[in-house]
Structures are given as C-alpha cells and as structure tokens.
Image 1 (cartoon, helix red, strand yellow):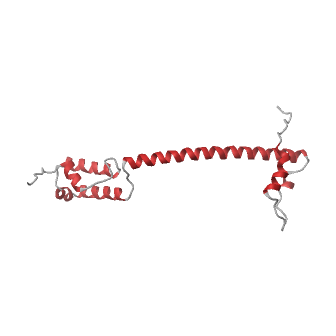
Image 2: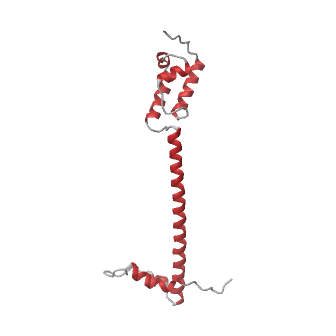
Image 3: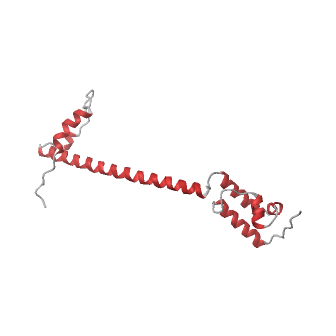
Length: 158
C-alpha cells in the first residue's frame, strides 16, 4: 500500500523548522529520526530532506542531540536532584568554613590584644624566621597559644 503525501507549503516548512529548533533544545525529546518527522507532519522523508531549511534544522538538531547537550526529562530530573544535593552539601561546608574563619579571626584578635598588653609591636612579632630555624610542631604551637584562648576583656570604651 502506497501512502499519499500532500504538498508542502511555506508555513509547513516554517512549522517544521520551528519544531526542529525545539527538538535541538530537547523540548520534544532526545531522539529524532526522519520516520518520526514523517509521522508527525505527514510528509515523506524525501520531501522533507529536499527542503534545505528543514535539512539544515534537522542536522543541527541531530548534532545537539548526539553531542550530549540534550538529555531526556528523566536524566535532567535526576541530574537536577543530584546537583541540588551537591549544592546543599556545599552550603553546609561553606557555613562550617565561615564558622572556622570567625573562630580563627577571633583567636588572632585575642593574640593581638595580648601582644599589645605586653607592650610588643606586631611588626616585631610577625617577622620572617631566621635561616635554619624550624617552626614548632602543631602540638607545641597549641600549647604556646593555649594561654590566649581566654576571653578578651572589655576595653572600657563604649
């Protein structure tokens, strides 16, 4: 049995090209074949391919779909959920770092206060180490800084 196809008008061409552009964006799915276009629009593959605008739009849509730029709705939904989980994790991590930074800043303010109380200048404390001198270990540093962990007393200013 032979199918009978109708003639293609300029508005048909514009409609088909517009749909192919939507297909390239993934709005109409992630699979595209000439057979699907035949069924959707009622024109033969040969007549669709004969129109340069349609052929160019089809090739563009196929490139977009095969390049992995377009995903199915299930893939996109799954990816969006994974990305949302990642965003939430990163927000929590950022908050933890902000809290640590606040504690770190507070500790250095305390150290600066105590250095000033002893009559020392920061530029004499913050010097480059002499050649051959090693930094104290993490444990030793913690013991050295432990006296500075107390609260900063009020300055008397208002």
